[in-house]
Structure formats: structure tokens, C-alpha cells
Image (cartoon, rainbow, N blue to C red):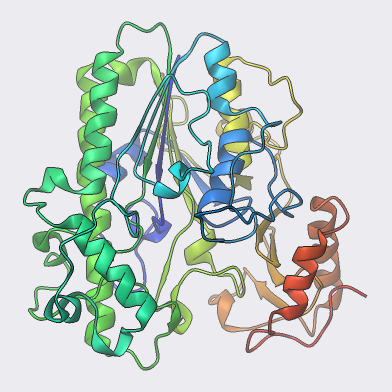
Length: 468
């Protein structure tokens, strides 16, 4: 049985037609929706740790990264994206290594440039891997530089800080001379991955991982995709503010959403290329196809643009998971058991009929999901920096690991994230916090505790302390 894992970075679940729509408009994703019709659709899928690299450590190994005991990286030439932002620990086996040792031919195609920095090792175990350069601030090109007029076109003056200007300079510099759609990142990744499938049809069994950094910012997309959602003229807005949106011009917010959702639609178009390639090659008849993302992105939700671990929100944390079985098992079914990225790793090994040599945090869940069996988890804990988020079917707890700055959301409310229920439910807060501490192994590394103590409480949090 072949296995193909597709990961889109920063793909909001509600921007897929099969899960959506988002608060602003319905997004066109016909190929994602076609996949959903042929797949088991998981409705309560969450990361194990965030953001980009911690998520992939969990996904590639099935092992917990939270609470980042081996995650205080200060590596030359790299920025500290978050605790856990480092290579996969040498003592942990990767899915590619495990499956390669069992006779699988393995491939990785990715433009997630953080995975390929000199200190990283996310390609371990892959027989063939390709890094497609140029995303974000990857220094693919050194010139020519942008004029001030070009900077003003891509980045509104009210958002121009030295950091954001440098970001846009490198992003646009890397994108110069891309004159056709096939030159854009998501198209290149999915075309190359499709070509690998064509070239490796002789293999008895394949494991292919496809990592598209799109629709991550910057939201650079051919204009006709953006005009599907905003047909106005004028300067663009393709960067995330990582700030409150109260003072952002409504037209700029609309343009931001249009560029993001246009990029989602473009990702859908080129995923369709992969999907049709698999169909033409006959691989949909002998391949498990798994589709997910690492996290989403707030674009004006709760008056914020960006992604963060505190306070946490579903547009970032609640992610898609579709699994297409070649025999049609689970097709069109939706299941709400709680699962995480580590569980995807365990499920891939279960599909392959392979037992890991190391104990794995992840749990295979396929049988429970397709047969409506017992849940594999009663709650999930997600770590991001000095914050934890603990979720079950009724409650969403978010606070710092020292127990301060508490938010408790009642998921049974019509609008769960408009009210903090912590003060009137201290027993729920304590129960969920204790579960988060237990999932951390009972304690936190000193550097995480210090981060928590130095982080301000978010507005609207409860003064209740979860840790006594």
C-alpha cells in the first residue's frame, strides 16, 4: 500500500468548502471538496505543538514535543521561531527512516525553507528529497532591490516597520521574473511531487511527503485569483500585521482576506493536478492519501491578524484532516473523535503494517473513526511557547504554564470565544490544567517557566490561578 501525506502550511480549516465557510465569504476549493467526498473527514483534529517546526517534529516522529524539554535551541544562522524550533532529535526515529527500513521508497518535496536550514535534518530517511527555494525571507536572490514605490505597492505605509519592509524586500526579490502560474511555489511543489510519482511507479510501495508552505504569508498570488474575491484596484496587502486590526482600513482587511483566500484557491487548483496525476497513474487504487495542515491564521478574527499561542483560537488551532482509503472505506463519513498530529504518524505506520521500535505518543485511530468506536483521547493538549491549550468536547482551556492568565471557553455556547467562563468554573480549570501538566510529564523546563513569568497576561483573562 502506497502512502501519500500532503501538508499545506497555514491552511485555515474553514477556508475549505468541506469545512467552511469563514466569517467573510465562501472560498472556492472544488478539489479539496472532491477529496472530502471520497475521504474520512475528521472534525476535531489539533496540533500537538506549534508553530511550524515543532509541528513537523511531532508529525514526522509521532513523539511529543511539548513541553519542549529538548527544545531550547540557539543555533547559528537561525532565528528562534519558538521553543522546539530545531532539528528532530537524533534519538528519535522518523517515519521516513522507519518505512524506508521496511522496503518503502520514500520522497519529500517541500518549499518550507525552515526545514532545510543548515542546522536542520527533516529530510532524514528520504531516498529522494527536493527543497524548492525562495519562500519568505529565504535568501534565494540578492538583487535587484525594490524601489520605495514597489514597497509602497506591496506593503501599506501604515504597516511599514523596518522588520516588515525587510520582509517584503526579500519576498518580492525572490519572486521577480515569475511570469506564469507554474512558477509560483505551490504549483512547483505539487508539479515536482507529481513527477516523482510518475518516475517511481516501479516501486513496490511508496511513501511520499509533500510540504507546501502556501498559503502561508506572504500571500503572493496571481492577480486573477485575488480578483475572485476582491475585484478592486489599488495597492496590495500581502503581509500579516501580527497586531490588533481595529485601526486597519476595512479595505485593507478585505484585500488581505482576498489575497489569502485567493492563495487557498490556487493551492486547491494545484492539489487538483496531483490528484489527477494519481488518478491517471492508477495510484488512487492502491494509495492512502492523507491531507492536513500545521495550523491556520487569524485574519481579523477576534480583532487580530496573525497566529499565536496565547490567547489561542480555533481559526489557528482547529485544523483539517482528510484520509482517503483506496477501497472507499470511510468515504464521505465525518467523525468527531479528538486526534493530533502525533496520531497521524501512528496511523501511517498502522496502515503500513509496521510496528515502531520506540514507544510512540501517537495513537492509531482509523478503526475507532470508521466504526464509531471508543475515542482514542478524552482531551488534547497543545503546546506553544510558554502557553498550553487543553481541549475536550465541552471546554477549551488556554493559559500560561504557570497557571496564570486563564481563559476558559464553553464550546457548547453559540459563540464560545466571546466569553471567559473561568471564574465561575474553577474546578473545570483545575481539572484541565492538571491534565495539561500530566501530558507535560509533570513539570516544565526552567526556560519555559521563565518565559511564562515574563509574559504579560492577555486582556480579558481571569485572575484565577490554575496552579495552586
